Image 1 (cartoon, rainbow over the protein chains, first blue to last red):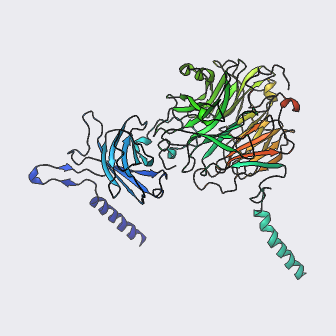
Image 2: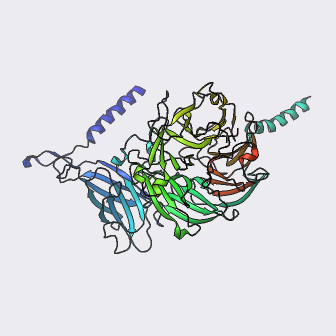
Image 3: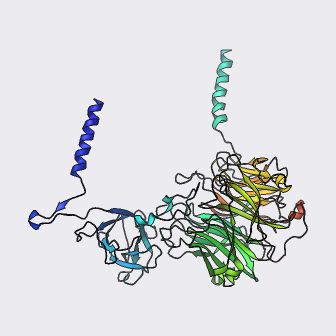
Length: 187
Length: 446
């Protein structure tokens, strides 16, 4: 009986694997094209700083994908860098008082900062980035603020691209207690 | 007979569980300290697990404590607090230095802190540790000019030490006034040795040339520290030989170097192959350099006490057997320590401040205690790393100051300990407290 179950489960798993394949074909035969759709790439968490009342229980994430406009599954810029689309969303937010949340993207050393824009009423915003390692920052700006080259208000959420976890092995020598989990903003 | 058996059973039923699980240490939440300890003051500093090491100035006219701020839990600041202990019964927060954009800096932040004096000005060095995923990974330390205290408006940042070749920052630091009268910063970096900086050069504007040496970790079966070579160290004058000696704990055990010439450190004594030790932590000698107190940072580890005499006499170069050990609670571990011979003051993590006496080095005895942290072990990360983190002693009046990871700053006095001068105990007047305005002791005593 147990064997029967195992076979059944294996069979179901195989079927599911086929039906949930991330490769989706689109474009009709009459178009003469067969290309891969933009598939989910990865996402990373946005971690609250608990700096602002009403955001301490908040959660957030950034979905990183390649542009749907690319016919090749990935997108690159003219200099060969990956060109990512970012879809930022927050939830469990009860923001009170004045101000609006504005999203930014920056290199890990903060030497370059780009404004993504204000979050919509559903606490979502889309943007793009063509850096390898980057941070996404959400700040609280005044109602008409957050339009400059860098944020002026307090940081409310922040997150690090998965690529930011790649680093030299310096500091991770034999018998070291400090593990990679300490990288990022969630402890 | 039946009645006697029933009574015996009843007594055993009551007693046996208590014998097995009862209180094993003399401190409790309702009686936190020994009778000879006086709590003078307490200043909570914010979220749990947000305080690291500390340092106090030794001169009575400069009553300042420096406390490193880190995020070991999930929240807190990253930088340094300056606290007035002019009235030890009412410690007062004077100044906060924070790394800019601290919410974007990863890992812990401030870890160890030490002060120094150079050309009649006072400075504090705050070690910093930031991860490579965010800003500041190359930043090792910041230096503040604190001459103008207690006026916080007069505190100013004068320099930052960056190590792009060894990212990850500095963990422990030690500042030593060398026999050549220069003041050096020894740092634990992600390097195969302790990086040494001339602090006078840095504050005088020549930071580019200020790294003047590296004390290596010798090769051992465990390597030479490809990650972080050393964890912690102490540097002191050794009167018998006239050498400036470095005592470092790290990969493979503990090492003592002659650093009289910083360009060519020479290994004098090693403590490797010690049972239960493959990575040393804090390592502090007695004032005469004969005994050493050696820490390892894992649960159940005691402080080990070694007698270096066979090595000092040239009979052996490696010592591997301790002569005694001290622990506050065998279930936990004890951490940093300050030696004011024969007393050893210990910041004992979950067990708070612990003081033991080494007058008979083979038989350490507890001399006092106060549990600064009565909470539980950590449910996340390392369970042992909470409670008393750092400790320092003011020699002039015997003030004891402790930084606790979760409860903040504490000031104490111990009955009968009204200050410390090694000469009064028959040993050189040498401790971690530097004598900025005096030349080193030339009279050998040991």
